[in-house]
Length: 470
Image (cartoon, rainbow, N blue to C red; front, side, top):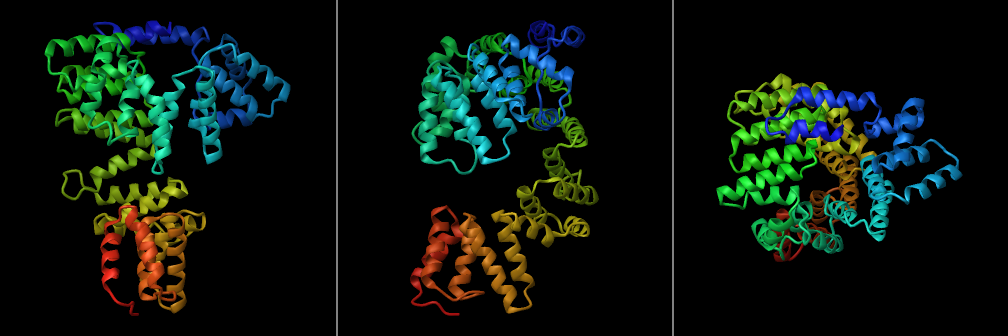
């Protein structure tokens, strides 16, 4: 039934056939065979107050050996205080099925709120790899290469995981190679040429889609498009990715067809609406900007914070036809109120760069200093740095200047590069602290090593000066 629904949406030559797809979805739901999946908040609610019918359906699907159902069911058992003997039974039972460990890693990564939970997710990927589930290496490599703190060891491990998968025509692995070794592997075109023959011979959906932008022969492009549709699983991620690839090569008719497919598969999910809007703005016709805004507004109405950022790109652009200072200010207030503490400083920093009219309207409803202070006390270095700058600007007493320098020091200790520069300047001039040319040079060197151009310039300046004066 699931395959028939996917055929009606993605694979039927006259598709997407929404009526037929909805028919088969209804039959699947009526028979209780549709695989259950949960968002993080839904999993937390279910663990706290288990719905008996949902629990029974999930348990039945776990007994069938569905990897995602087993992952969800076993996580639920661990969260709701199930006796150890029952948990151990399901651990042993799951060993007879493939892809359970990597499914548990995928689920835990989606649910992770702390470094410890993220580490637990990675441990499942490593266990899956040890058990011969090579696909887990793709997920593990993707995590290793994500974020702002990717180390050389992370890149080396990721490259080792990706090379065998890329050599078998796995497109997601080929696409990640450039992130693992951006210097040694050359450009994206170089990476494609290195794997062109294996893609031609046995490339999967992702590999064939990657190849589209590098092929010049019209007949081969059409051949690859047929192969892409034949090899896809027909989910939202693939549909929106394929639409983007078609947009890149200028195949407008097919681009709009797959945007429609993505809309069906997106099911009005907030983040998915944002992605559809992004593709329409990037690859659609000029008139599609309005349709993109409708998707952003729908996502915003559903509580998606990323949609606020997209709307702000329009409403806060003073040079655009959609400029609306009042709407932009209201969106900034909402963004700040709904953001998690670590994200509040970034929202406030964006507000500080907006038009004066927007800043004034938003600041009437936002306690900027109070929010920075709350976030700083919670341990977030960007907030510490911005609080220090506010204290420095508003300082009326020597103690306030001292406090500002202390906040710069805390942020610098936590690795905030701009704070390192501010602290170095304070040390060089003795602002809020005893002057120290040596310490100033140490902090400037750290910031310069991190690529800060101001630090690099000041390092040269200090080296030329015979002494530090206050």
